[in-house]
Image (cartoon, rainbow, N blue to C red; front, side):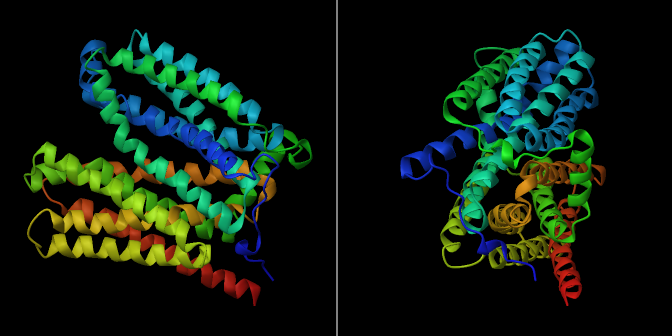
Length: 414
């Protein structure tokens, strides 16, 4: 019989017994978690100027974004297994040093192809930092305690993309797009200092995986074929993909289709930050009384309802922009229950492969997000239907995958 992940309790270390130590532990990991989103989005306001300076077309300039996104996924697949073998601290420090150096080189990139390559390196090192931060939580917590902690980190992960372009725009008031990369280099060095002073090794030698690269590949393959693991990882990836889809197409739909000003669009977009903030904290509170499994399923049902409501509202001409904004708020809020609980439920049965498991989870999210985002533009931005149909397919697919996975697991155990 399978043991419930919620039967496993917190694994507290000696330095994590007071409220002050827990708060310090959280803020260190929260700062580390912001590196990936800031790397991806902070330079967005400078893209037009970047294209003019390096004489690149719009599509070519977009490759700097794609390269970073690919790097974030690949970096997780490298950093996760590596941290399982040699510990968390060494890959983290090495990645932050390399990230800072790559950011400085980005600032002085002479050509667009050079910048694309450097953005790939920057993304890979940012991916290593992110996956190590996720694995560190699993080293210290499990079950409901892990889900509650992931709720806090998930909040930071989703809020960071909202603030990163705003900060980048403010930086452009005093410098050029190259200055944004120098600021990112400074952030990398700041995080390096925070990690050196505030984060001790959480994976002792006795808990590390042996066997080198071959064993790491075997671990990744084992996770990729584990129905229970995928039953949480795949729905979570599709749920996050719905948010990526909205990020990619919302400005065109809200401003061009519904004729909303950029200022009002910014305010409407900020509501998503409020929604995810409320839902992640509600998830933490509800975990005191309810299991991660129950809250995960409730989140998926709510997610699918939001996607269906979005498509029906657009197809049947519900008047006003809230035909989109209302259901999207429900989708975003539902991710506050799906994301943290899926992490805890997927990783708890694999304490010996927290880094590899975190890598697979993170890479799946980036892969789905990178694949579905362009679909909205591919089918046109003169209507809200492509956006709504894509998001509805992802959210309904997440619920369907979860239901199918649970049914198969039930038949396997009978």
